[in-house]
Amino acid sequence: MAPVAACSHVETIAVTEPASSPPACEDCIRAGLSLVHLRLCLECGHVGCCDNSPGRHATAHHDATGHPLIRSLQPAETWFWCYVDEVFLQPEG
Image (cartoon, helix red, strand yellow):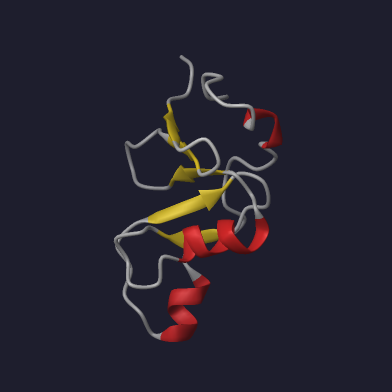
């Protein structure tokens, strides 16, 4: 399931599913924060919370690592986001 190429970072996708089940934002758990939605880093598999969550850990992960792409882990959501190109991507098919 590769996203439609609308950015130059699609080739960095190395991970498509979280390593742990159920996935969780470990940063929120450590800090005792509540979260809204989860996002998966498609380069290393880090799971972080969305920007509507108090910790904004998915974006913080991008800022710290430069990893460009995340995928929503919400049921029925199939979009990807490229932080570098600031574009939503939809998977093909």
